[in-house]
Amino acid sequence: MKHWLVIGGTGMLKDVSVWLINEGNHVTVIGRQQKKMQNLINEVKNASKLTPL
Image: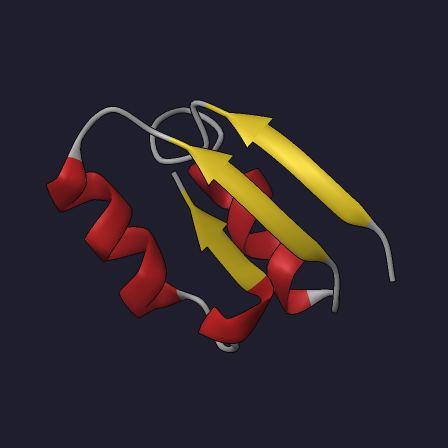
């Protein structure tokens, strides 16, 4: 397991963020919009592997 930092991971890189989490990695995502971040949290299979900022 690796720890990834994705800046802008709720926009264009959302699919990358979801893929990394679903592959078992821990991902910290930096996003500006709370609504998009909540959509990301709801979409991933294992939200405990996600640290939203």
